[in-house]
Length: 74
Image (cartoon, rainbow, N blue to C red):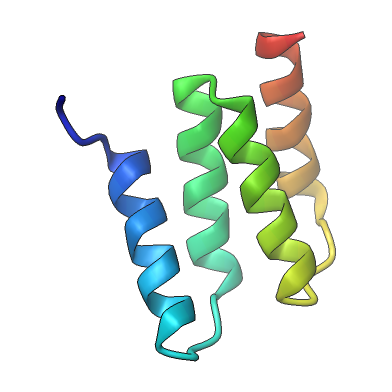
Protein backbone atom coordinates (compact mmCIF):
# COMPACT_ATOMS: atom_id res chain seq x y z
CA UNK A 1 0.00 0.00 0.00
CA UNK A 2 1.39 3.37 -1.03
CA UNK A 3 1.60 6.11 1.58
CA UNK A 4 -0.10 9.36 0.56
CA UNK A 5 0.69 12.95 1.48
CA UNK A 6 -2.32 12.86 3.79
CA UNK A 7 -1.04 9.72 5.54
CA UNK A 8 2.39 11.26 5.96
CA UNK A 9 0.88 14.49 7.25
CA UNK A 10 -1.15 12.60 9.85
CA UNK A 11 1.97 10.73 11.00
CA UNK A 12 3.84 14.04 11.35
CA UNK A 13 0.90 15.59 13.22
CA UNK A 14 0.96 12.78 15.77
CA UNK A 15 4.74 13.05 16.12
CA UNK A 16 4.53 16.79 16.78
CA UNK A 17 1.85 16.23 19.41
CA UNK A 18 3.85 13.43 21.07
CA UNK A 19 6.79 15.82 21.39
CA UNK A 20 4.51 18.28 23.17
CA UNK A 21 4.87 20.93 20.49
CA UNK A 22 2.08 23.23 19.36
CA UNK A 23 0.45 22.48 16.04
CA UNK A 24 0.28 25.52 13.78
CA UNK A 25 -2.78 26.67 11.89
CA UNK A 26 -0.75 26.41 8.68
CA UNK A 27 -0.09 22.72 9.33
CA UNK A 28 -3.73 22.02 10.03
CA UNK A 29 -4.79 24.03 6.97
CA UNK A 30 -2.47 21.90 4.81
CA UNK A 31 -3.90 18.69 6.24
CA UNK A 32 -7.48 19.88 5.81
CA UNK A 33 -6.75 20.73 2.17
CA UNK A 34 -5.27 17.26 1.68
CA UNK A 35 -8.45 15.76 3.16
CA UNK A 36 -10.59 17.69 0.70
CA UNK A 37 -8.42 16.68 -2.25
CA UNK A 38 -8.60 13.03 -1.25
CA UNK A 39 -12.32 13.32 -0.38
CA UNK A 40 -11.67 11.90 3.07
CA UNK A 41 -14.36 13.22 5.40
CA UNK A 42 -13.30 11.06 8.34
CA UNK A 43 -9.83 12.57 8.40
CA UNK A 44 -11.30 16.04 7.81
CA UNK A 45 -13.31 15.62 11.01
CA UNK A 46 -10.14 14.50 12.83
CA UNK A 47 -8.35 17.62 11.64
CA UNK A 48 -11.28 19.79 12.69
CA UNK A 49 -10.99 18.25 16.16
CA UNK A 50 -7.31 19.22 16.15
CA UNK A 51 -8.27 22.84 15.42
CA UNK A 52 -10.54 22.76 18.46
CA UNK A 53 -7.91 21.07 20.65
CA UNK A 54 -5.36 23.72 19.64
CA UNK A 55 -7.84 26.47 20.52
CA UNK A 56 -8.00 27.66 16.92
CA UNK A 57 -11.33 28.99 15.73
CA UNK A 58 -12.43 28.49 12.17
CA UNK A 59 -11.77 31.23 9.67
CA UNK A 60 -13.20 31.81 6.21
CA UNK A 61 -10.74 29.48 4.46
CA UNK A 62 -11.26 26.70 6.98
CA UNK A 63 -15.02 26.97 6.62
CA UNK A 64 -14.77 26.87 2.84
CA UNK A 65 -12.58 23.77 2.95
CA UNK A 66 -15.00 22.00 5.27
CA UNK A 67 -17.97 23.00 3.10
CA UNK A 68 -16.11 21.84 0.00
CA UNK A 69 -15.43 18.50 1.68
CA UNK A 70 -19.09 18.13 2.65
CA UNK A 71 -20.19 18.78 -0.93
CA UNK A 72 -18.00 15.93 -2.18
CA UNK A 73 -19.10 13.55 0.55
CA UNK A 74 -22.72 14.41 1.10
